[in-house]
Image 1 (cartoon, protein in one colour):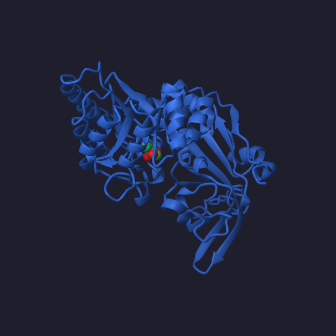
Image 2 (cartoon, rainbow, N blue to C red; image 1 turned 90 degrees about the horizontal axis):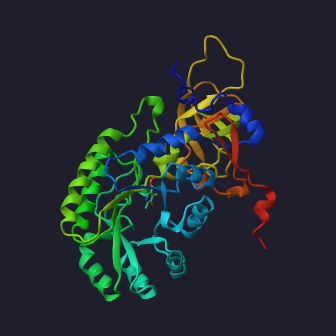
Length: 420
Ligand SMILES: *Cc1c(COP(=O)(O)O)cnc(C)c1O
């Protein structure tokens, strides 16, 4: 039998998953600090280009204890709402550490950024006009959509004509007119082509954005976006992103462009930025749940758990794959029992409520603990109280091996608190 992924990584550092759920409740999000820090360093060290910033896309996981660690590791933050700015401030980030990449925001939300001096990017002609009226003479960044789109599911591809994001290059003359009309200074441009990009899709997106950048003068920064992929199929040996290849290719593109651009610009140097979300936090999280029922419906066998799509939405929303480990609470059999196909489902009143479909797993019993791997990104941050269920606690296994609780489970009082 293959070594479980969590054993190979020493994910639990000697802690027993069942004992953790006994203390902190089930379901439970468990994070590993060492892995989280390692992923931060991977991104910070991606290139030797000297002016390079890593903005952690905090929508992937907004827990402020994790944000503090990201800050310690030298990351800045990419935010998509004022609420995320509030979380970043609580974690110790300053306004100048944040880049607000807005999509269809209100004037109040623009004012929030302007008043605090947070760099703001808008992504339509319409929002550029609104901004110009609100803050004439101000600074602004723009999100372009060069046409390259990549991703693991239609819902996460954010480049190309079919998505709502970004300004297409054809509108550059109109952009320039508006910048002049409102006396705005364009400080930078950005893009985000999607999630789970391959190295080459990412690099073609970079090239497209550089072509757009060459049409503007005196940019201070160019931000290539996030979307670095992580291997969700580790049990089948899926390879991680080739950082050495990506980093080298990226460095060459950035250096060549900066040299050429520097000859025409009056700004001291060009800064490049990236916005990884999932890459930073996905692999540092495992979601634990408990099996409460086993059922055979005709051909299909189900393990019914407390892992509804209110706890982890990715499988239901994107048909996403997460590797599963079963921590059996039964006495061991010898020889070990054979694998059998089983679907892991949740406790929500919806048929789309599943974690894994027809997965080959060892026999499962009531009381067993299920581990959903690579659940650290878009897990808790997308969770809800649907079916009026409590969102779970989050704990961090620190590098020293100690457990730190970083969020408590919702109480029923919390759930009633906002209702009048
Ligand atoms: C979601 C998002 C990211 C992060 O995407 P990942 O696939 O998690 O790396 C980066 N930038 C923007 C603008 C985003 O919306």
